Image (cartoon, rainbow, N blue to C red; front, side):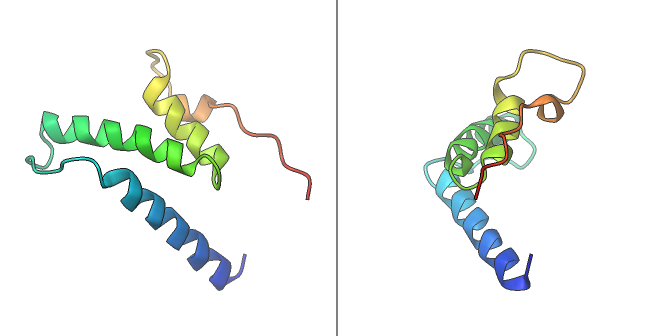
Length: 86
């Protein structure tokens, strides 16, 4: 991956993060339960925004939000998208 490709992907990811965070409120103390709740909503919104451009990343985030209780890392067990033919 070239530096241009990496910066383009980084810009795409940043735009998804900003868009997912826009409707949320972060006017709470860092580390507070309210901030943790906002971050939980953010992760759910971000996974939806990533779905088209970054489907495997979106699946991993969805697994963190919606998986049943587990002592393991739910993102590590998220199903991966099959490699698309180009």
